[in-house]
Image (cartoon, rainbow, N blue to C red):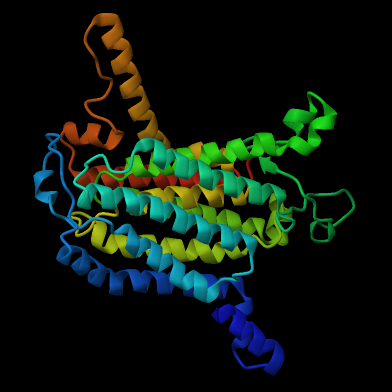
Length: 399
């Protein structure tokens, strides 16, 4: 809104200072600071409201130290993250940008799914919340919409290096291409997976691309959901991931950096930096109240939203194949659950009694069972998350 207003004032009346809103860095910085302030200033009011409505967490006794003291802590705190993100985005981002529109849709869609889940848990006294098949259906629908828009929308284009032509002057092409990390000739065109079978199938590239998008959105949102188990872990890990994605969006949307790093130049993707800045500020603002001992939990309202947004941004900046590294914490948490459940079923069938790999899954509960304090687990996970984020950014140059 303010972006459009000041752009109009600058063009029509040459208003002093209005041209600042043309600079991506200025708007991204404003979005980050304001989202952080909204989270801190108004987060207290949201927590008090949740307390008045008695929207507190019901804790199942898993035998973890300090677990019972968390009973009654307000949940649905993901509303703080969503509100703190969307307000600065509406103010400072270019709302005509297709990527911003997709990210706003993703935030609201996943937020609604998470909210319904939390609402059922609290007000319908159903500890299981929204049935898993409906959660997955919601994730699949979002992935399908995001994949279809990115595949078919005319403004979703890229520029790649052409011999003898500056990257800035190269033609925009419509292609579902991505970068494969750690490889020198690292361009992958999803359409090639079909044309290698039959060149006449080139127009059916969406049959490969959209299912890939659906899988990534579903996997990352569920991974974030599993990571939300101890104070500050999901929000802190996500802030680190988002910072790395912000850097990737920045360099991909700037032809000078894209040319230097030999990556795709993505016209119009720079606006994602504004959204990423707002999301980072919102996550840090939420952590003000979520660090140990937490005064509020994000609930599925927050965790599903976080995972969905991270997945969509990774796909937009053509770094979806880097997700297992960048979102390594989410991946490890999800993998620990799959291994635990799979081995338990296998051993029960083979030996007659179920056996476990971990003391408890997801992985952070395993370390709690070993006697580690929550704060130590969170800090060590965040350190690993920082290392993975740095490695992910380094892959922009490593081939």
